[in-house]
Each structure stands twice: as structure tokens, then as C-alpha cells.
Image (cartoon, rainbow, N blue to C red; front, side, top):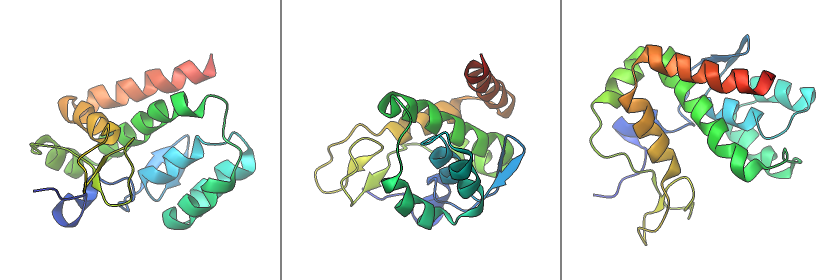
Length: 153
């Protein structure tokens, strides 16, 4: 059955409200962290910490994106997802029991998921969740650290 990240699978969505710490700040969801990578300005980064994830998603459509965002977005999503599951062991435990992970959606997002009507899509969020599923909490933390250290070089 094609079902999106709803009900008992809602925790798989980046929009799931769960505090996630990143660079000394607490974000209300992994979506907020993901959004913070879209622009490098301090003003934008602050907004990502303070703004509701649904509002943030709307206003993010009008910002200037960082150079190479189409490449960077996969790395940004990995960091956001890996942080979420490395810091929330109850969610990591649930993730480890998932059989199939497909981000079915009705809004036509064929990059992060698959279109529920056509079945077409890359399911990149599903693939990243599968990566997180295979790793231990310790491995997730180590992987995030490596990805962030790359930025600082």
C-alpha cells in the first residue's frame, strides 16, 4: 500500500516535531536544520532556529540559495536526518524496524520521494533514511561530525 509519512510513520518526515541540536542551537525539527543550509546569511540561520517549520518552508522559496544547492541539498539532508536519529534514540529504534522506506507524496516531489499517483520518483529521502537505519547511533554521530568538519576546512 502506498502511504506517505503519516500516522505511525509520521516520525520519518522532516516535518515531525522533535528537537534537534546543531551547532549549539536547538531546532524544532530536522526540516529547520535542512532549511538552514539553503542560505549562508546569519539572519537566515537565526530565522531557521526561531521560525515554525511550516512557515519556514514557505518563506524558503524566496531566498537566494547557496551556490551548487542542487548538489549541496543531499549533504544537507543527510546531516539533518542523521542528527535527528542520532539524538533521538526512540526514533532510531523505530527506524531500525522499518521494512520499506518510501516517501510517497501527493504533491509531485519526485526528487525526495515518489509520486503516489504515478509511482515515479527518486526517493532520495527514503534512501537517506535507509542509510541511517543501517548505522548505529555512534556511527551516525561520527558521520555527521565528518560531514561538518569538511565545511570548516
